[in-house]
Amino acid sequence: MTFLELISNFRIDFLDTFFRTVSYFGEITILLPLLCIIYWCVSKSLAYKALFTYFISGSIVQGAKIVFRIPRPWILNPSFQPVESAMETATGYSFPSGHVQGSSSVFLSIATWSGNKILAVISYVITALVLISRMYLGVHTPLDVFTSLCICVAVVLILRYIAANYSFPHSNKTALLIIAIAYSIGLILYALLLVYWNVSSMELVSDSIVFACSLTGFSIGAYIEDRFIHFGTSCLSFFMQIIKAILGLLGLVLLNYAFSLIPAGKTVINSALSFCSCIWATCIFPLFIKLVQKKKYSEL
Image 1 (cartoon, rainbow, N blue to C red):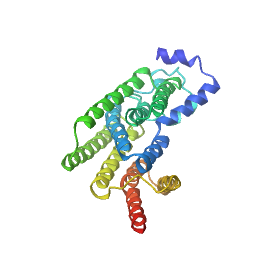
Image 2 (cartoon, rainbow, N blue to C red):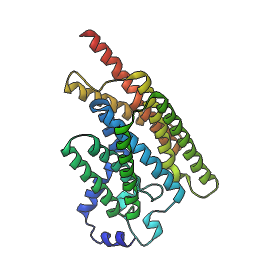
Image 3 (cartoon, rainbow, N blue to C red):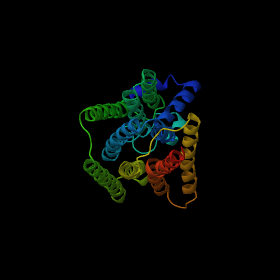
Image 4 (cartoon, rainbow, N blue to C red):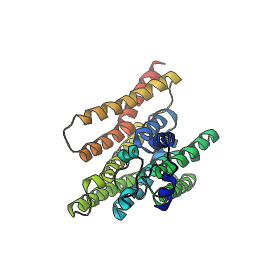
């Protein structure tokens, strides 16, 4: 808290706006389209590594959030004032940081596996800026952000070692699917029990429940694609890649709009939307890509 109070003395309108903008790179609003474009258009291998890093580190972070249940800085110290515009997305518990976990897992993966030095430098800069932004905005302590960073670094290093030394047959992928679904169910049940026991509230555990549904959707979708679809990222032209990306992202936008019309609780809507978005991104739209590719190649 002392460090947050210190840097709060240097706040100005320009830096408030700058770091609030930077902070978006730790939110699903930016990360999901980025991961989808990499997955559909650039490299499935890179996308899978980034996604595995994101979901493994996210599982640890979201689990830790509802186990330790550490409040936000302004709750720990009521006299402390964060940047007001940042509080809207500062949901759930404080420790560890979900924004830093999201940005670090994705951008450190890009830096590690893209094979592009310029992209690596950009990714490292974004990772550092998001980490700084969460402290500058006053929504996380140094412990929150550096714990998430360390978790992501550890996951990247472990996955790099595994990728370099092992291959995964279908039997292992089936086991991974079962583990992911079992963990998701356990995380949801634990979160709901905390609410039932009046230890927490639905608002505070909502992020963990939504994440668990995303993990389930990704695990099922990725398994189906790997076993039955096998789409390719290549296209006949760069223009077609752009069209492909637009169509896929348009599907996500339509899903978001459709779920916004459903009269249900926020946690239920966001959980169902997250699950369906992951299914769309990992197997439904890839199936569409595969069918179009098959038709195009048959005409050549």
